Every structure is written in C-alpha cells, then in structure tokens.
Amino acid sequence: MNKRTTERIGVFGGSFDPVHTGHLTIAQDAVEQLRLDRLIFVPAAVPPHKQGKTLVDGHHRFEMLRLATEGVPKFEVSGMELKRGGISYSFDTMMQVREEHPGARLFFIVGIDSLAEFHLWRNVESLLELCTVVPFARGGEKPEQIAEQSRLPEEWKKRLFEQVVRTHEVEVSSSEIRRRIAAGLSIRTLVPPKVELYIAEHGLYG
Image (cartoon, rainbow, N blue to C red; front, side, top):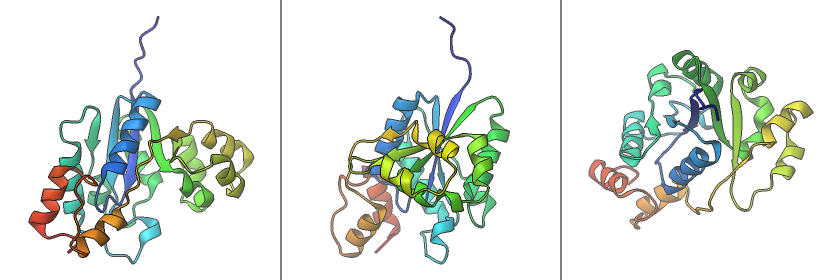
C-alpha cells in the first residue's frame, strides 16, 4: 500500500465570540471524517454577514481559541484574518493558506445553512476551485432541502453536497453564552474551563 504523502489541511473560520464546545465538536468530527493532518481555526476580523455588529476584540477571541485548543492533537489557531484586518473574505483566507501550504489538499469547513446564500459569497466559483468546501450538518438539518434552495449551478451543488460532515448534536451557541453571562448565569460545560476562566478574568460579555 502506498503511503499518503499529501498533507490534508482543514480551515474552520468564524467569529468564535466566544469559542464553545460545539465548535470543538465540529472540528473533531471534521478531523476524523476527512482524515485531516491538521485543522486551523481562523477567527474573523469582520465577518461579511456581521458588518456593523460589535464583536469582542480579536485579541480576546484569538486567545480564547488558543486556550480551547491547547494540547489538542491536530488543532491550530491562526490570526491571519485579524492581522489582515477589514472584512474577512473566505477566498482571501484560502488563497493565503494555499500560498503557505502549496502542496496540501485544502478543505474549507462551513455550516450547511450558509449554502443557501453561498452564491452571494465573494469569488465563490474560484473558492470552489481552490479547495474542497465541506458543509457540516447537525442532526436536524437536511442537506437535500438546503441544496434545493441554493442558486449555485448544478455541478457545484453536486460537489458541495457529496461530502457533508455529520456532526454530533451539541445544543450551544455563542449568542446563548453571551446572554447567559449578561444575565449572571453559569456557562460551565458550555465552554472549556480555561475559556470560562479567561472570560471571567477579563470581564467579557458582562
């Protein structure tokens, strides 16, 4: 049997405001199902769909990700979008990853619900040529229904929906965590212990 030599790299972008156990579960499922050699978390500077909304400073979001992934095999964190600044377009990020890892096979991990408006993304067809876009679906999401809503050409739909990552169902969101903190409620078990401590120490989301 020939040994696989091409490195397989997954890229998982988002606000991560804050990172939580759901994000980490998706990432681990992706590593296992896609047989990734590494998975890079990339916190966004300004997500295109969240322009005008206030995010916690990128330094804090990066640091929380670093703490959450510390010591976890194959998990890495990159501040490339924070350093670049401005609106964080996925195509620009994947171009940078390609330049840094010219021989690797790249996988871009995205929520399957995003595919309904995927045709509106910047340089979407070039993005699809640059890497393998892998949607992740939670328990209740139906890929076939989202495929019907997508306005992408049929050949792109086929490529997008042939490799869906099915993730474990974890009922948690960053917005829920922010609401709980503001209300003085516990977030224990929703985020890693080091992240919970960091939030408390820096008075975030209060």
